[in-house]
Length: 340
Image (cartoon, rainbow, N blue to C red; front, top):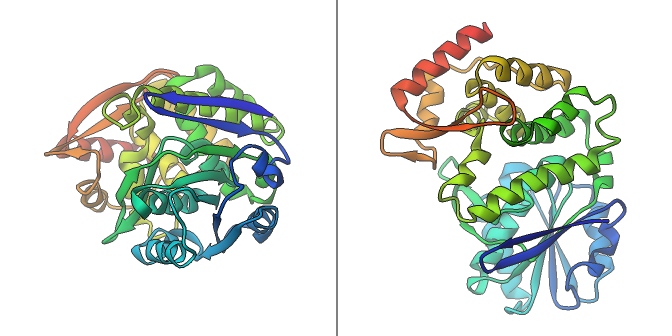
């Protein structure tokens, strides 16, 4: 078992990383109280059921699969369940699943009684390396992704790499895109390791740990996304637009993969494109420029008429650039020409 310790201002919790650890979550979390275990239909049922069966006062709630679970209706269902079961501020939620489950469960925990404890057990590579820590919780609203939410950190995180055995190749690669994102901006050695790996799944526990160390360092320095934390948005400015415009055709990590190429230059772009191709991730999109810009106008990172973007020209290094929409349009057009 590897343990990482998140510490920032008055926020403190531990991240436990170890194989075959999920059935023993009560060793790491305070679960000797009333607990609502939340999962969704896309998660292998045994993960949440095994946990719920091991706890003395647990109830299980299964949400719809996918983005449908990040809706006001799903949030309302969780809150009604907590109210019906008589949950108090001393009780807890445990999210078991991907980023969608973690997002809506964390937001429900933030809302109910102005904040109750929740623990996160991410079961996809994407959620393990990305949304498992950081405290960002949200739901989608009005057709806009993550537009309603709150900062509410988990009281603990448990990552069991064995849960990745049930992921198909596409979902695994989607999560790997987020690792590539962090390595491209902040860790040239990790990037090279992924670039040259012969069997990435064999070493995935160490790769998850390395990615989380990057994210922890950033979030600990900027827990409320006031400045430095924007580096984690590399690939997301255009990537979120690609994801939304694809209408579900592309997964989040796949859209971020494409989005990184819009914000990379020179040698970095060549190496990022090579690693994406190696792991079967997309390297281009067929979405019209104006369609992408229409989604970017709703981006939470947009300030006035400009967007703060993250650029990478050399692996392991990054820069911030405030770009107006016309400048972004030109960059998107030039990149599409390169794709062609």
